[in-house]
Length: 186
Ligand code: ADP
Image (tube, rainbow, N blue to C red):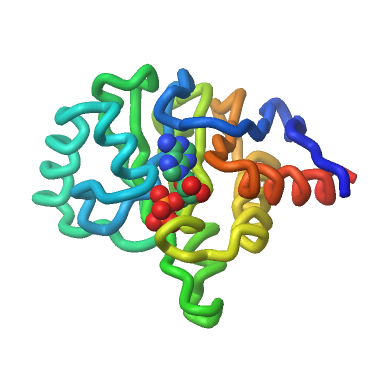
């Protein structure tokens, strides 16, 4: 089956790459956080390790203001020591088999992140594959939802974003996304 790693939607380029999101130089990177915003494993741990304590300090201030972050919502902090200026923290759904609103919650996590980036007039953003690690969302289904969320947003909302990246850590996840993008593009 074919693979595609780049399409243009309106004025925005959407690209898939395989790599480590903590090394991205986009204006923002997105963290697949948990509701506590206190860090964790996977990409969350990697971002806090690479970005240093300034990120966690801001997360603490946010939690003291608004409490835990609901699934599907997003908040923005400094990027600390990262090359990215900002980290957008969002909480994807835990996979329970698909009958607990997982699709809508995953769509929302992407949409809310894109809204925040647009409000801040950012030009570029990088997403990981939200929910497909510890949260157990099947990768092929998550790829479908993730690409749908981003493409729908870019088609319908005015945005400052010129570049959107999916930074996919492992080859299998990269392949799922690029297979799905080929279906969409074709
Ligand atoms: P979740 O709890 O939302 O499932 P995880 O961090 O467990 O989040 O996994 C989400 C995805 O992020 C997985 O595909 C995992 O392989 C990937 N990942 C882990 N570390 C990184 C990293 N440094 N850069 C990009 N993706 C990463």
